[in-house]
Length: 407
Image (cartoon, rainbow, N blue to C red; front, side):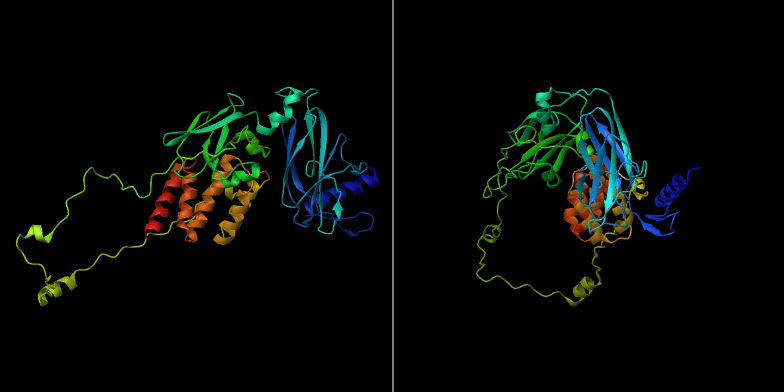
């Protein structure tokens, strides 16, 4: 067997299984070569979504290389890479949509040192496209199609005490997610601050927002939201002008009954009575006072605090993809009951767009952190958001949050 190949194979084996350190067969020196791992690629039309796990040894930028040739020791990456900050762990690449494309993701340290070590099917991968690629719209409309996911003509108008939201769907079999916000939705980063009012349904949709609050709406494809390449195009799949249901006048008396109850009057109760001097209350007799003191007043018992709840799937070891970040939070600060840290990490996690199912689970955990930090109103809101996804679990926590609020 060729000695160089044997040495290269030994270095590769030690790199993969020794956590970034290898022993050079020629000199016996320790080689520090950190790398990203579990690089995977998913395709949709001409888009490639890359996911990986960052190296724990270095925390510098991550560099993504693309080539039409395999990455080997004799094929160093001489092309210009895409640079992403540490912790991103995903990237969507737009390609021509044909042929075979190779990807390599390199780790680096904070000093700018990049580590070009190629580990097949670990930090390198390949995507095979058919010889021809058929885009849904014509070439002249591809940019507009991608800008809104094929959705167009969104409109919102007030009908009585409701808002009717309608749009032209991208396809009969494509699920959509409808958002509502008190602020204009101009880009994808505005979606975490909005509320999901419908998931998986179609057009039109009747919404019942709080009267007196301005509302903006946006609709995106569920598959593009899950893939991380959804887009907002104001005026096409997001409303520009707000709609608002008029609130009732604050000074108007509530119409609880047609006529008020008659008021009591001492003069009408006892005709001819003189009430210029209202008599002072007489003290209780000694026996009555003792009887009153013997009555044990019922003391309200504080509700028992619920135990934390986690889904079994989120207790597994993170394996990459958009769920890896959520599982790391659950297995870390959440299971350790470090509620402040878990709350901060979940809020950062939800600041990025995720699929509806993953976002619902993250908000379920966020509601629990609010509950354990005495933010019961915030907890109630989060559990109401996930009630349609997990009705049994959410209803139990809704009752607990309400009981805590009342107490």
